[in-house]
Length: 296
Image 1 (cartoon, rainbow, N blue to C red):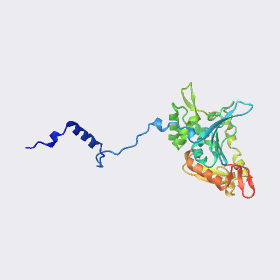
Image 2 (image 1 turned 30 degrees about the horizontal axis):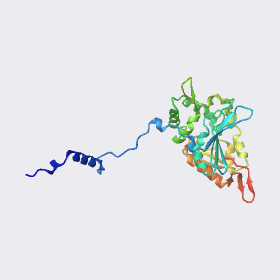
Image 3 (image 1 turned 135 degrees about the horizontal axis):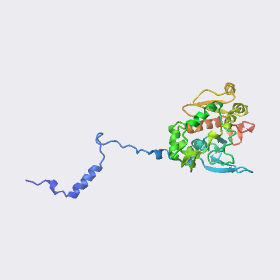
Image 4 (image 1 turned 120 degrees about the vertical axis):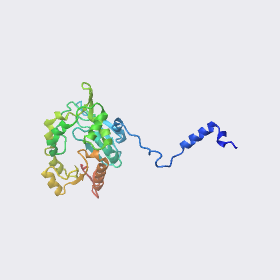
């Protein structure tokens, strides 16, 4: 009786063969579960992002005869200047993702207003000029009273802003939220940098007469509305019907259009610049040169 060939194979060879066989791909659909991408922890998902990925540089502007220092973020090297002013409680970095797109064809300057971001002034609570819509004034106290006031970490603040609905774009929140916070040593937690609840005396001044000032500017204008086709003043409604400005309703966004849909916001701004022939020195009029820089 012949002996089995298997008995003559060294044990080391069998082990090597087993390792080789086990390394071969399994083609049965039922033999293994498909690979899944690794999940991110909450701290990773909401970790801060560096503004330098969107803006090119930052700069402090010192105001003469005072201790006031205003912080600027800038992007782009040529073309017209898109000057960005944020709303109460935000910062110049709320335009970061949008700036990353706009700077391809224009220059961007975003400013941290008084009492916000990295700006530092002798009176951070003097918010006597800022804002956009009279209708939002009645909701201000409710918004402030409902928002979280203390955060154990910056990541938690970013998470709350997204989960709470104040911002709808995680990446934008990861860039902009950190500069809206400051660390309170006495409470050992992060709090909002801008103490908006202490500035109520200025709120009405943010809005009164703003629609009329907007309409009176003798330049091309565009008004972006967040998810609603309702204008908040009779003057704007009449002005829009008379064609005094372009109106665009941006759907599925909250208050911060530039953060929620940065790509769409950037496209709208660049289209406005192109359509109105806006260059580095203003509006180009064929045969007549340039005139004053328009506002958007």
